[in-house]
Length: 203
Ligand code: ZN
Image (cartoon, rainbow, N blue to C red; front, top):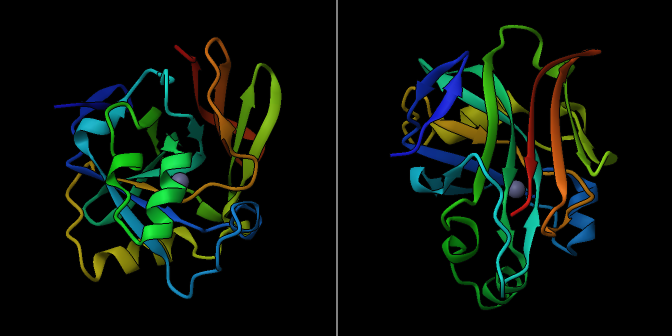
């Protein structure tokens, strides 16, 4: 089983529930339709990684996302996550109306920083992703079509969230391919204060 770190303690999520198409500018950059209800998919525990691996053949896109850890049915902690996606193959699957597991649920497809307990105002959170010290993506709940609390409620209508399960809230615009050697630095802020960060070099 794979673990993530919550306030320095190992936690084993049973699953990662992901939201797709949650930022209008990202929907536009992939020429998708704006959904009326959240697009939801799952990555298994085996997809969790604390390293970023590129792939020799398939182009893998990064998607930086504000991510939450659930405890007792509540959004209890926050971290930075990368939803890695085999984009070319995803376009083929979407065109054929086929499921996305091959392009979203592969080993190392969910990369996370540490998680930290957060009981502040979720609307004050924001995310920044730097690649080689250049700001590439930024996001905050104000830009989301479906806010974190609404996502939690929607998921809870059909799925049991176990303690330690993770929610990825979707990516803003600015997605792109992994390149070997690129330095990724993801940050989560509460207001002006950075509360958790993660750094990786693409292998
Ligand atoms: Zn995503």
